[in-house]
Every structure is written in structure tokens, then in C-alpha cells.
Image 1 (cartoon, rainbow, N blue to C red):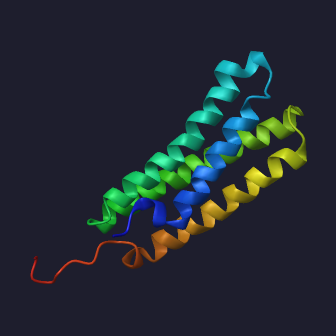
Image 2 (cartoon, rainbow, N blue to C red; image 1 turned 180 degrees about the vertical axis):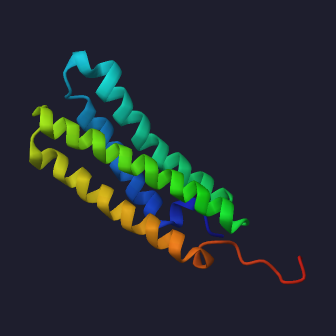
Length: 128
């Protein structure tokens, strides 16, 4: 039986979340309630929205809505990661791997939204 962990995008989002949370531990203390918190919330939300999309795959429009939410949170995560770089808090080498994951997640989410029929549950035309 398929589960959300079978979706490659979920595995990448989990990896992005774990790396991001690790990196955020190196941010200055004065950023704890702004940058650190926002970054952690957005990367966690990517994972949560993908899980919700999986749960709603019986209804393709709802699934796409949650994938869209995941894509928005993924974009927000990118903004916070870029802010970290611009402020010089963490080196480019440390953030590049997370930004690479972020790009892969974006591409997969967009693919899934365009090809929703491949990810939605197949229903019996008789409603069974």
C-alpha cells in the first residue's frame, strides 16, 4: 500500500527540514524569534502540506491546493535561507545544499500539480 513517504517530494522536504533546522542552530541568538523561528516554521510547513496533499488525493483539486500551499511555504523557506546568506550568518557552502533541495522540491511540486492525475487516487467510475 502506498504511503506519503513513497512520494519523493516528501523525502526531499524531510531532508530540507532536517538540514534547515540544523543550520538554524548556528544563527545568532538575536535572530531566534524572527529569522530562526520563521525559517523553522516554513520548512516544517512544507512537509505538513505535502502530507495533507497526500491525504486529500481522493479529491484532485484539494490535493493540488495543498501542493500549492507546500510550494508557497517552500518559496518562503528559500527567502529565509537567502536572508541568512545576505546577512553573512552562514557560509554559502552550508546553505547551497539546502537551496538545491529547495529547487528540487519546487520542481517536483510543480510537476505534481501539472500531472495531478498521476498522484490522485484512482476512483471507480461507478463510484465504488
